[in-house]
Amino acid sequence: MNKLSPYSIEVLRRICAAYADRAFPVEKAEQLRPKALCRAELQLVVQELRRAGLLELRQRIWGEQLYQIPPQQLAAIQRECFSFRPEPLFGSSVAVTGPAEAGLAAQLFRALVFMREEGLPLTAKGGIHKKHAGRLAGLMPVQDKHLYCLVPKASADETGSIKVTVLLDIMLALGLAERGETAYRLAEERVKSWLDHSELQMTGILYNMILGRYAAAEPAQQHFRYLFTSGALMRGNWYVLGDILELLQQSGLSAGKNAESMKPGCLAWLHCMAGFGWCETGTADSGEDCFRWMMDKPVLPAWQQDTDASHSAAADLPEDGCDTGRAGGGFIVQPDLEVLVPPDVSYRLRWGLAGCAELLSTDDGLWSFRLSRGKLEAAAERGLPPEAVTCWLAGHAAGGLPDQARQSLVQWSRTIGRTSWSEVLLLTCRSDRDAEDIAAHPRLGDSLTRIGPLHFIVQQGSADLVRRELAAAGLAPPRLSGGSMPGVAPQPFELPDDDVQAQSKAYELPALEMTPGLLGNTAVLRTVPLAAAEAVEALLPGADGVPQMWLRELREYHITTAQKVMEQAYRWGIKVRLSVEGQNCDFIPEQLRGNPWRAAGWLMPAGTNQYEAAELAPGDWKEMKLLLPEQHRNSSSA
Image 1 (cartoon, helix red, strand yellow):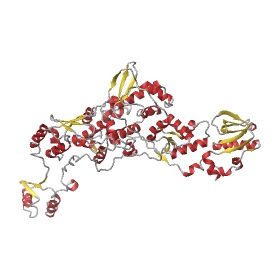
Image 2 (cartoon, one colour):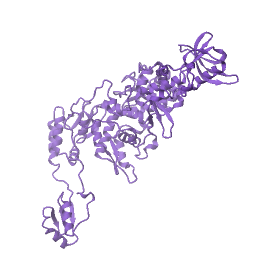
Image 3 (cartoon, rainbow, N blue to C red):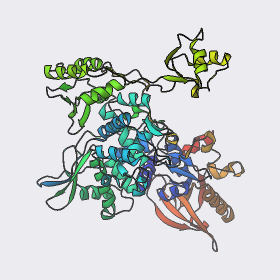
């Protein structure tokens, strides 16, 4: 950003303060123009910001054009353009009013486990069964009251719960779940790649996604949400919300709002952050609202020139480029069958453990599971023999399995899987005569087993052969739906072999237009590219018809010609170099008036940025010339 011109930084600062990352009509950029900058110079500044990737031109389907700071650039612009140095609260006790719940990455993990085990079936009308939604809601520590700032209450009509609505919407937006004909189901491959991330990476992706997906409508609120992750706010220290809002005003980021009007929206965001485990809220002895960070902060994208939206996990790595959370430790199996999971255990191992043990707690960084006969039976039903589960647990448990735990697993294994259900294809005959003919068929002896006077079991994989032979004998049964055996077994659950990163495709956020989610999505505005011709033809339209002497040197003109030169400067939005009382000055004409003819605008000594309002008549200056913007002057003379 240090390569930008000073005026570009100033205009960027004004746009950021006024609009944050909200899109605004292009004509409103004129309201943010510094007084010492003419309209043509503002266009060049905007082009410079667009080339740097710090400002984008977007267009609605009906043609309206808007400027927008890309959301992934806002945090870096705030850091570069605004100072923010809050002081922590010292010498006062704080009563916690909103404790931090489990982190959002952990709560999302629990929701994914629930969907894998129980699913979210749909009703005939396409809504989620309230029973399943209620069961999922009961497992989530975040409460509906935490999330009022994200979605309106009416958005929970389908699930009956705001927190289920938000969590499912997050899963859909991340591409971890998809809607089927009868139920929401997991996108298995995306889930695997998601679990390859460390918790810090997950946290960065989730926070950035929430900032964009549930963005505040007011720029001041959006500024607060981004500044909430500022490095100036130290983890564990209490900060007074009122002090932060005053700093927001002093920094020029309140967008015209006072602290009192901003406070309710900021408090609502803090409650949301507490519900997702990032912070705690409290009340100081003085009665002031306070908050403090309780976990590692999410990493917001750093500024990079010519970046796209980069919906990839790489954009959310820590700034040093390192993955700080995948240490690959093992979990601890206790003699009482409780399994403790320290923070260094990867999410891939936790996912495997959740397939054969009951998830009890995800609080305080130390997760806990419990081994049980019921979970061992459930794993066996999904294709995992108890012996394989025992082996896997022993291989990934720090210090191995205690004897008491191993004995319990062995005892349960003896009574699991001794009987099983099998689905078979039954061939039914209408009469005894047909049954006898089929039983005597010379080529069907190995494909059919007679189990009654009129019934045969068709061996698996033999349905097509049996039908062909029976069709030739005039006894063809109806075709099977799909042409194969019914009751296809679900894909068995697989335990991860080790703690090495899976060889699946790296996780990438789906494109915004591809993830409507449960709540839908705002319209994705088309980005208008910066055309090469925009810097020439668009800046000085009709330049070929303007006398070159108006551009080359200071000259004294007749009154009527002087008016024409000034009017041309006004049309192009450029400055005019004037000789006023023997001093060279630059003048920006902002308004032309008649009867008598006058030009109103800003007058400044040449080479300075000091300006004053002035209204000039042709007799107020002697010599003059049109002054092309500096960035355009070289290309024009060439």
